[in-house]
Length: 404
Ligand code: EPS
Figure (tube, rainbow, N blue to C red):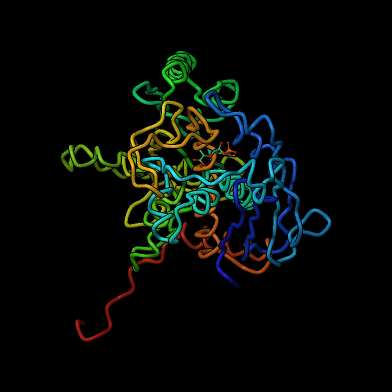
């Protein structure tokens, strides 16, 4: 069984974006409508540029699916670019004045060219369409195990919402989130956030913000403390920091944890027999271990602890400003303002969708490492067997070795 991984390929103005997902077990129902709805969500949000009016992203499944189910082979998905013009020099001219904050300068030096376009076409966040397609496929697998994700915008620049998202209330927030032009379920905060974007637009400026993903229904023990690379929090952090324009990632209370005493921070453990099972029967993800707070964000020792996994990411403001920023011409080294390329004023709502899918993919990979198999049926059997065994943890065996 290969590990669940994905690769992406494609340039922003090339023929399309490709996602290739490997390690997906056979038998997972694939709903293209779900994948395409998530792709459309990524295109939305107040503050997006003209590109999103040109594109209508949808994933063409090229392999790995037969009669609506995965067959265990790599799943390749192609999202065609309507605005394909990479070799049309008149419409995609060279860029000699790098944008501070973008990959332009470092990439041009790295690849030994003065034309920043060689770098920016791949660095562009258009690539995140492929990541959403891969993550949406992962979410279809997670759903088979009752694992759901909920992503939303926590803040745009300094305008933030303080809503608390829980296992019991997140479903009731879905409609409000989807109705919000900034993907935030808090109506009053949405208005303040939209006003901040409007003002940035007037000022020919850009704004970033905070996005959050909550994952519900993860069984305990995904990830491991035995190897630093395999800690689920390290893997989540890498996945989130790998999203274009992200400058920070937190799990649970994150950086604010440092400002608390241990007695106030750590989530006390209780056992409640009534919460050992799900309402429909079968063991619950928490196995009845109740935590009245979730400052750890569902991860202790790099492993899921049965509580919702909470990940927060910070997106910097987009580097392409209509007013430009101080820069130099790479050919002459003379001071010039950075070159303007069509872009967004704010892509935080889109980044929230991208992060939700990047997080979902890592959770799915960790789930398969714990309870994986070649087919969905085998995975499901392994998952049920693990939960059954975990419910009756074996008692510490009597000491028989040298200490006896
Ligand atoms: C994006 C498409 C891009 C940009 C944006 C994200 O399209 P274009 O460059 O043709 O306008 O709008 O990319 C960036 C913010 C960036 O820095 O490159 C998309 O589909 O998400």
